[in-house]
Image 1 (cartoon, helix red, strand yellow):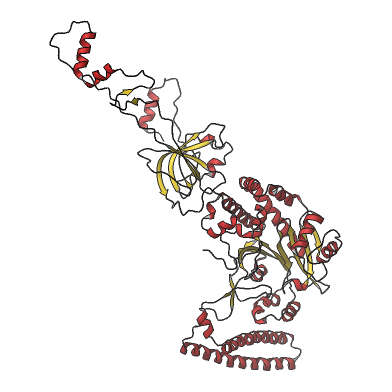
Image 2 (cartoon, helix red, strand yellow):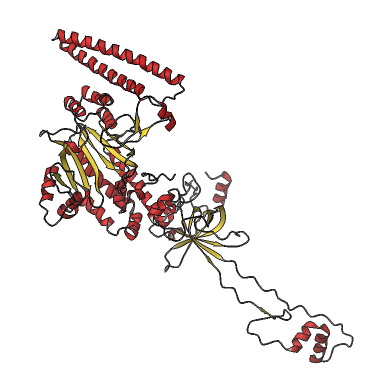
Length: 639
């Protein structure tokens, strides 16, 4: 509030008939350009991507930071300067007539100047006038004006860069500033002529920080490097306009993923990266804390006893369950007695194996043979689907977003050793529900990119694929074709004008060539293929009534191919148990998974989206390694 003195002053200076007014307190005005919450710098996107190109901010004093994308030194035209005679240093204005011999004598010898003045004057000078030396005519040559440095600076927040101008002086002696130099500077925004590419420039008043560059070793020169070359410099490539744009799109898709599932009532669950579970379909990375020499010291025979103990413990659990069922029924006393005797024998065997295990540990310790960190074979997670199911059976609808690992040495533009997956699982849902959710999610991602990454998508259209925006729009408006595996095979068999590398027949997998033809040539829109032969899908997929196919689907989109897979899970204990035995999977690994069927089973379904492939689809790039921040592939881990 205003002070009493100021109020009195206001009152005394007004006519008495006017009502007294008291100034009101006002809240501090919001700055035109908000600085970053955790830094005093202004993010360049908030300036450059304004509708007026930043012109409305002209005159604002701000702090900006970023990396130099280009640097050019400009010299001002020097002002007209006096020219110096080579012989005596007399300065003559440009265009002046040549200096006469008498002028030279007058300047060099003072007595000649005095005599000349006497003879040129009126003759009224006293006879003994003192000769005064003429003032010096020597004028120092002015220095050329300092150069101006024009920079384009980017902080990674948007595609375009900000034009920055530095006028060199004693305060700014630093030059040059090569590409890659990091600067933090304070200055003023000013307007540029309308005909230029940039609407505004940032005139530097004060340099706050300079991050220098070893120019001769820095790979990101003005010459554009191929994306394949940039993969070897994963730590530096985010500074390129192209890779930075891809990563902003990737970030937007990450946010869109969490938004979609959270808005639709899903809970986020983190599944383990380390697991003992094997789906039986993929090559895995085994995890060990032992060196190669230490691994060779272990005795396979002892390890076999350890594995046997796990099997026996799993059998004890099953026999306990059987006894509980017989006790509840109370109809077959003989069967119950036999089961109890069998359990007793199994426990005795387990006791013997535990003694061997104890002896094994003592032997390892005596022989100085190290024990691995985990007591059983452990792998990097290929899929988190099984673990996610356990939370779907408790929370309802859940999703997970994280890295998955595949030890596949084959070189592929759609596969890397480490890729991020989005996995969703829904309780009380069937195959059609999963297909509906996957389709809605995909359309949501496409729409999100178009609405929230417009500048980056313009860059993609200009640099990578000019049809990419139209393709994303088509994905949103299209109705997706849904066909069974059998229908897909029959449609492809009727194609007469195209020879496939693998002829489509029942029991053959649909190749990328088959799928592309279905999407691009036959239906000309995304296709969902479902009800595959059971041999093509993991053991946990629900068996259909025909006994030959399972309730699974693949979603196929133009250019990227299959990137969403889903299924309804087998909720029936007997059929799931039979499938595990049929494939010869180590049953003890899946006892916890079978428990989900033993205790309150429920129908549930879900899907997995290859997140990196989604980024690939949005950007139009051909190789998935270019949209992964730090790509890992066979034989290649750079940092």
